[in-house]
Length: 137
Length: 67
Image (cartoon, rainbow over all chains, first blue to last red; front, side, top):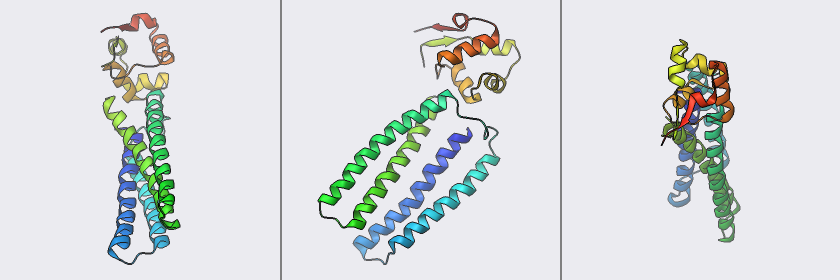
């Protein structure tokens, strides 16, 4: 496995776990009445993600001989494909977030919908990059 | 599998090169060289010319269409 493959896998898993926890807690607050501080939780999620990414990348860099190599044409092609798919997901997510505005949701809810769209698009981008790697052998 | 077959592996092994060495010489990763040799990836025209130049042969001799 190349450094960039491991990096994309780490990013996908860490984002899914950290923001999955954030949105699960948000839903519990919204529908279950659990105490929730959006700013503190979001700040905590961003901080946790930063720590996991930094420590995780230090670890995978230590186990990858190609960590200093620039991406070549094949990896750039994977990246272009992944970014293209992620862009369409972002556009659909942004339109859905605008939709929540017209459905009478509060400003924080619209903000959370925008955040969810951005995270979902980024997770899709990383996932497509990984799938392209797998398919290409 | 891509329809472009190649003799990259045979030419590389004839010169005693590893996939990493070939990749480093032409600016590709070892994984990309492996993918080219297994016909999982068709290199760009530029990469094909770089490989051919390195081996002192022509693109025609290295790559051919095979369905």
